[in-house]
Image (cartoon, rainbow, N blue to C red; front, side, top):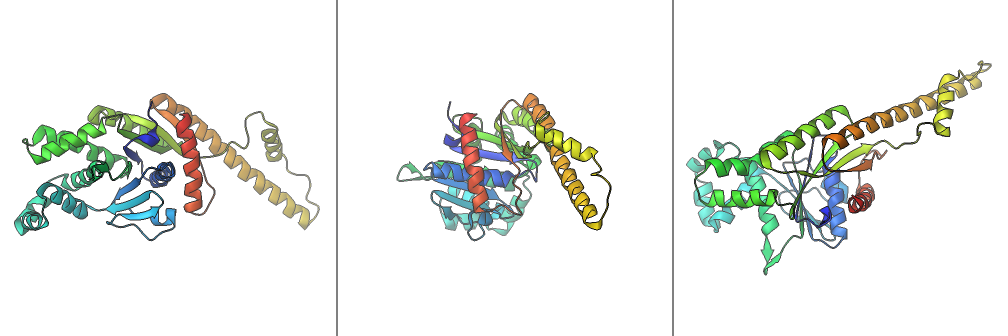
Length: 324
């Protein structure tokens, strides 16, 4: 079986706020470390890649993030221009067609064109060649939130059903063939072990299979709390005893302060244990409802994610993907 890390095109999706960009950056760092020239592709995203890799913010031009790793944060205008140049070949013809006032008005009225231009541009990067060799070994698409992802990935099928044969349908067919080819493309679904993200992930996995014919290759459960108090362990028993105790009579201010500190510590530990138990319940539910290998990434108790954290997560992800 071909590893996820060896796929040509990797889609990263999930509900907003689950850490899609963190996972995409970590996965890109892993493929780059394996010697693969990697493009990390985003669209209309609030830039975080600059902070993740310790470089300037990423815009609509492809920039280098590090050895073997590059990034671009496109938008519909930039993507449409590149797609138009691909189809029409020459910039002067592109300007005559796409920058004509009447054409621009017409284009704005076409539903889904913005999303299709973004999808078409990332597809183009998977086919891009220089001297008959691929420019990119791996293209990782940090996709929009789940609902937007679904509407974007439906577009090639809609075009094939509704648009007469021509350049648009030719490219839509190529995009569709790439998406459903497990030898080249893999969908990675990122979620949290919590109620709303878990529910939305189940719905997205079902709809992608039904509407696009795309299966989830790996399910990455992000921000899982560590199991510091396993059931029936000595540390769990000590915590139970601390929570049940009033720590004796308060005979002085210093004793009262000490007692309050211990109580606060016990309450914090109990909160972590409760969060871990909640995570475990949803991890079980997700494993039953989504037919994909499940990989856990830990909650990092840091104020923000930077280069050191991306490299740490990247190595964890690489190891766990190889075992899955």
